[in-house]
Length: 314
Image 1 (cartoon, rainbow, N blue to C red):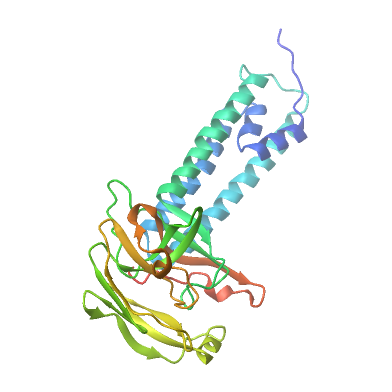
Image 2: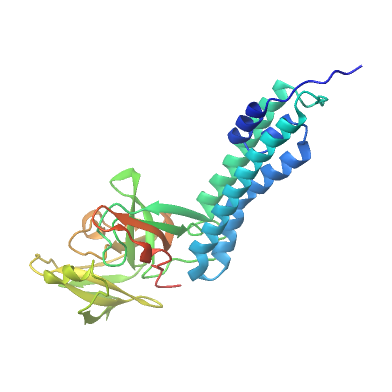
């Protein structure tokens, strides 16, 4: 005759905190635990896929909704496991899978293979978040911005091609463990010429009108000692700033095959292709799309930046 045993509510709670669904397995709800585990695991790639295939303006909102959904599922799994164990008390008839080695095996496979695999796939091939620590991309990207970047570039079968004007997330040529964010100015085979503050690509100037209002009280003080210009890209435009009293050197060259030429929008405060040369296409790991959070010590949280699109070629 089988004997009943007790289910410890605290142990059930801890198991669900370690991995959603594990607490349900402990209380005999294997199917429910599996559904919670798969549901939570699917939120990351599902949110990224929907964000990339929906309107660009809704990208950050879709991601935030799924973050809230994942958090809700996680909390539900914890509370449900605790309540179920408390309700069962000492009247639990153990199942065949209620063995320590089963819990350990499920945790190892679930966490290290499935969860990690889905997360790594999403970050490597769909969407990844990046923090911007510098001012090299002012006035487009602020120091303290958190950006979502589209990772569907430079991969076998990718339909998205890099364009002039794209904000590229790239591996630093001088430090392979660091990443930069820069503006793509020249594509393979392009002839790029820099003369003062004027940039020409294939003999055509991309500089437009001078900008006298950057549209933000945090940015406009820059115009005291900088001049802002509007530059054109394939489908849109963006603002850049040049320091008024800076020394400028003219340059002219052709971008080699398999390379791109990149510049920072804050032209005199950026390390870019004028210093480290062109960048191999294989070193571009993503294309910046949208700000989802922004903060600085001076300004605090910039609530108005949430949802700001930085992809001029959208």
